[in-house]
Every structure is written in C-alpha cells, then in structure tokens.
Length: 241
Ligand code: GLP
Figure (cartoon, rainbow, N blue to C red):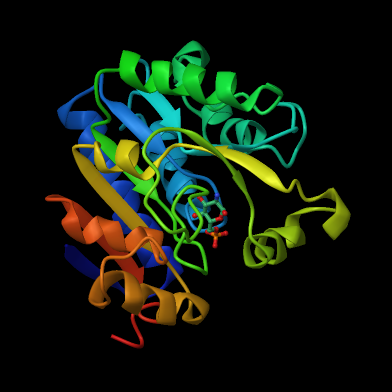
C-alpha cells in the first residue's frame, strides 16, 4: 500500500482528483469504479472544475459504482444514482448510458446481483476503483462478516452504518436497511485502487485497515493483499499511525 499524507480534506480531494484525472488522460476509454459518501464529494468537485477548464474529457469513460440502497429509485435524492448524477455525471460529458449503478428498485435480490455482476464482467476490468471507508471498515457496503464477499451481494446494513448515514435522511426510519454492493473480490479485481479517508473519526479504523491483520471483520483490510493500492488520507485520519 502506498500511503499519501494530505494536509486536510481539500488537499486530499485535490490529490485524489489528480490520480483520477491522470487515469482519464492516460486512457481516455478507461473504466472507473466510483464511490459515494461524503468523502469523495470534494474529489468530484475538483474533477468537474478540471472538466470545465477543458482539461478533462469523459466522453469515452465507462463507470461502475460500488453500491445502491435497495428500494430507492434513481429519482430519490438519497439514492446513490441521484448522488452520482448530482455530484459528477450531470456536470461532465460522460455518456450516461455508460454509467452503471446497481438497480435499487429490483426487488429480486438474486436477479439484481446477477445483473450487476454481468455488467461488471461486460466492462472487462476496472482500471481504477475509488473507495471511501466506513467507520467499521466497510468498503462499498461490504459490512464486517465471517468471510469476504465475492460478487455483488445484498447486505443488511449494520446499526453503525445506519447511524452514520441517517444524517442524510429526514428520519432514521427512512434509512433503507438493505443495499446491493459490489463484492470484495470484484473490488480486488480492479487494476488500481484509490482509497480516500478524511477526519479524526476514521483514524482508528484506518490504522486497523493499514496496520492490522487482514480479516473480514475489517473488510477494507483485504486491500493489503492488492498489488496497487494508494491511500490518500488527511492528517486527522492518519493521526493514529
Ligand atoms: C457509505 C457508502 C460507502 C462509503 C461510506 C463512508 O456507507 N456505501 O461506499 O465509503 O458510506 O461514507 P463517508 O465518506 O460519508 O464517511
């Protein structure tokens, strides 16, 4: 793992955007694995600025997102499809037909997961996978478990994840309890992985991810086994290392 120390959130965002921009410039028809959550928002803002300045062209880019809440429609402003449109896709020249997010409205979980695995297989490999980090070490929505997940799976969200994400919803009762997420093995199949982490509240879990044992109890710890992972974290997130 290569760990890059950023001064603060803005610096982390600028550095992460630079890695993604380099990927698009070097391979204009690349496949980007994208993430939601509050951490990558600044990264997307920076990429939009670079696009507006004429420095980036997303026209040939394909994207696959990590996850989606089960039961939320693309029009629901808490869905991850809405998030991606709102923070990135609506502001750059990406072809929306080439942007992929699991189908939150598919009630048949087996079908939703099989369909998304087929999409992941059809893009022939993710060039760069962007990841955020959950407070319990989850990546995508792969929560702590007895074993690492493989393909797309339907997960029941833990209390800690529901608590962390309820700030975005009108009330806790509105937070979906299940989600579809790309599996850990699919994430590990990406050629390069970029993990962005910000804030003192992530310092303890980031230490476990980087320095602790590889265990499905800390899903992101599996990244230690990937040959090309860059962690960009701010000083607060790195304060325990
Ligand atoms: C959600 C997402 C994750 C994300 C995590 C952390 O649970 N499914 O992909 O990494 O939140 O979010 P934040 O960046 O807001 O801390």
